[in-house]
Image 1 (cartoon, rainbow, N blue to C red):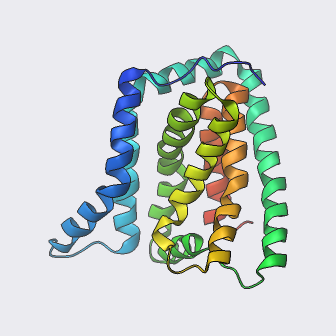
Image 2: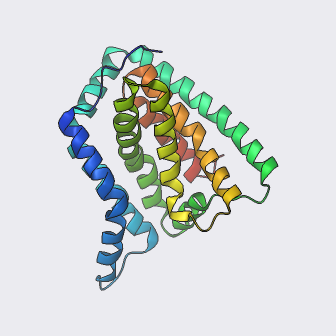
Length: 230
């Protein structure tokens, strides 16, 4: 693993990223829901989620444009690191995910992931929008926040903390909307289910020194998930 990461958000991107992170999770969903209620023909769940994905994607492009540019340049400078990180990260994710699913199946046989169920339900109403949203729009938006912002900013200070906090933040943000539906044991299983992705995505960024490695892995994982291939 590289001893340091050269590609990271600058100070302006960091401030903008953290401000948008707060807006994204505390205000944006409510604003979209409220605005949708004023439409003469309200959007369905799949369409509304696509708008949410699109806003996040465009916001990340604006906020992190320098970071994304330097990360892309790093791909061309060190293509071997990039390819190695993507391949190893994806294989590691598949292995860790399979082990985690086996463990969850043993501990809580009746467990189901409400986030995945919601996505599959929306896929049934508009498959095209959900595939575009989850495979193309979501990975850059989430990776710039959880790996580029949270993981990278802690990496130079405490690597253990950078992994632990970015992994937990990534897991928690996917289950916050479903707290109350899960029992305490199921809530633990829900967090556990997202740990392999958080770990392997962070490792691939550290290995390649470019955010495009976890973006590509994330896109592949989402493509497999949305198409029910795993």
